[in-house]
Amino acid sequence: MTERLRLYDTTLRDGAQTQGITFSAADKRRIATDLDALGIDYVEGGWPGANPTDDAFFATPPALGRAKLCAFGMTRRAGRSAANDPGLQPLFQAKVPVITLVGKSSRRHAEGALGVDGDENLRMISESLVESRRHSEEVMLDAEHFFDGFKADEAYALACIEAALEGGADWIVLCDTNGGTLPQEVTRIVRRVAALVPREKLGIHTHDDTGNAVANTLMAVLEGATQVQGTLNGLGERCGNANLVSLIPTLKLKMGYDVGIDDQALTRLTALSRGFDERLNRTPSRGAAYVGANAFAHKGGLHASAVSKDPRYYEHVDPALVGNQRDILVSDQAGRSNLMQRFAEMGLEIEPAPDEVAALLATIKEREARGFSYDGASASFEILVRRTLGRLADHFELLSFRVIDERRFNAVGELVTQSEATIKVQVDGRDFYTVADGNGPVNALDHALRQALAPTYPTLAGMELVDYKVRILSPEAGTAAVTRVIIESADDAGRVWQTIGVSGNIIDASYNALHDAITYKLLLDGLAER
Image 1 (cartoon, rainbow, N blue to C red):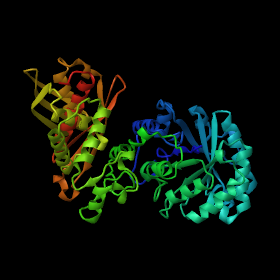
Image 2 (image 1 turned 180 degrees about the horizontal axis):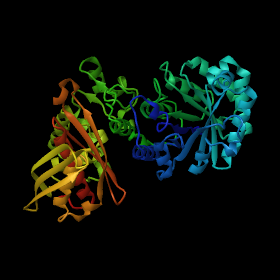
Image 3 (image 1 turned 135 degrees about the horizontal axis):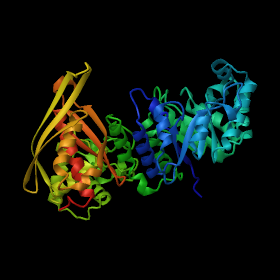
Image 4 (image 1 turned 45 degrees about the vertical axis):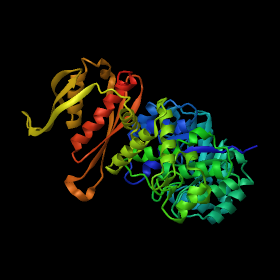
């Protein structure tokens, strides 16, 4: 029987510690939902009470189908009871199924960082877990600095583990907090711990400061760890955490473990990885294992010739298994296969002719060369496909727009900035001319456009823009740089979608993304399909 491993994602906490990364509460809910759809077992939402974003997230948590939502915190303070510890109260009030507590497993860190003696630290671990059990279905200890602590004082590190087991911990997670442990050390130390901790209770949490986080995780699994922690695309403090996007296919496809993710879900891994980067306004790594654009790219010559005869010569797995595709200069067959998969996801029951596929692939490549990236804007991709194949009706046409920003002092001497948009559109053969104010030029443009469309399409009243991201694609051009805008929209039916616009003018790029957003709303409502 194939052994079942449990996947625990820490992106929403560890990933938020990445330099330059900030999650909004809405970001965290969407990412948690994506992880749940993939098949992750545990999603760590953050640290209740630590910051307003995490408080907002846990106040209105996402509805997860299979993943268990975890709240993270630390063991009680010295000299306080766990029941009355102010740091633990927000975790208990979050009413989540899982509470994960970080506790020192190094005597040096307990004495130096917490200022407590070793015995008090053991009581802090055990008592905190006992109290947490009263408020949740499952409790875990993240044994902080475990590997360094073990190398310095093996007996004390193991005593911390025993204290956690006495406290009722369902999982003991060994953390390489500094990321400096090497694979052979992980093998030796986890083997020792596995003699004390049952496999079904042992987890691993590694950092990538020596570039060995994935390797260290695999070594721990081979020695008995059955819970694997990591983040999407390896985000995390300093050099990052173990990359779940690399670990999942390696564990499933290479090592034969059951990770709870079925074959169909695995084909969404590439889209999830790239879409996650786009959401964070980061350029997806072309060289990323399994999911990068270059992961299965073959330049002309010996390799390309061999791959054309048998892909197994230079590919360690079939790229389709992880939702990626082979790239040999221009591979029409790989392109067609990928497009047909996307069509199925969009519900497009069509069989395009070879010339239609070629035209669509050419259009996509041309737009991607201009800066479009559809991994984080699937709604725009669907609109592009439907329009190119003649299966999308255009229910309004822009004739012109003008946006004015005025920065001035008001009557009481306050400095204010006011945006006004004027737009002229044609709807069903009639011209509409509207003017609207807004909180910034994009908001004003949105108000003016929907004011013109509302009489004909009243369902647009239930749509709103919930996020707006801008990336400069050619920073060397200074203020003349090409700009990419991604807009996230939602409606009163709970549907959320992303659209993209690219232009040398940020307002024009914003309008293009807004146009797609409204068109997609009409499509969802059954009004835009030809």
